[in-house]
Image (cartoon, rainbow, N blue to C red; front, side, top):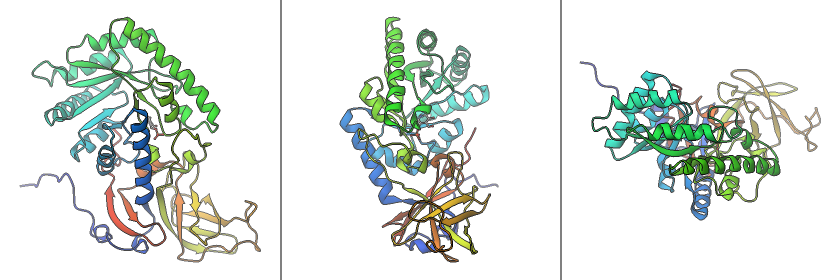
Length: 406
Ligand SMILES: Cc1ncc(COP(=O)(O)O)c(C=O)c1O
């Protein structure tokens, strides 16, 4: 007889043996988490939410890990967001019980999986929520849930997604959202939970003033939509949204009740290029790609991490110089290689008289441009305690929802 699949297959032996060893034992390229920096980010975000009386539901599409989701919930998060049905299934299978799919699901077969998961989570004392942006989507969701509920009672919370500037999913703020809220409320098996309002484009506007203006406009749209739904006789229990670039602005506006920021935990190079808003905590880089120099010539060195190790949609990684190391720039060397040049004090590429290139075998730490798609390239994240230079591997973190794209 065939053995049933294990929810948690054992770690490969080489990875299991890493725990307790120094960073030098980590083979390259590898995704490494500086656990001390990550825990400071975790605590700063949790403290922000607590102090400002706003709920925190971090986006787990960033780390795709049940261990990290549970850590966030232990620190005060009410649950996590995901973007895909299969991400929700993977995290739930690994023990996460409060999950919000902050996205549209329209395929009937997938909606039946959503309904089945909602039932499993509810039976386990947890909950599932989802967003919608069409009457057709609501009808399909209701049909899927009806086929799964025996009691006829609501199985999941449903948010109406409004487009507040992202130009992606969502109906325009205002009357279109009222129509959808009423359509949800008319379905006995669904519960109208409020508004999904996420302004993705505002997250990476570099200037604080630009971000402030974008979120001020979005807040007016949210408040107007909320007032219209309430005028139609429906309570709006919650407005949820916001990301790492703007969450202090959504919070200050008073229009949002729940924050969905995700990247704050690892903090990538692209977010670090935003001008810092003093109203929000400063976050540290916690996700690194450990890489090794495999070739050196007169002009450059080559490391063993290319864009199969890190995403490049938001720019190439930055090289993280450890104390005593010279500055290096990273150029695209393709799938498996990175080209390193040394950088002079004036920021220009150094010539023959500039700082020396790293030597064969030297370790290079990269800060990825975009954390979410970088994590999705790795099965495991190696958690290091005590710093990148002299630290020790404390735990290997499974990327439970790696490749969960459906
Ligand atoms: C719907 C939604 N909410 C929240 C976030 C979190 O943003 P970040 O990881 O940039 O903090 C994202 C990211 O793309 C998103 O798509």
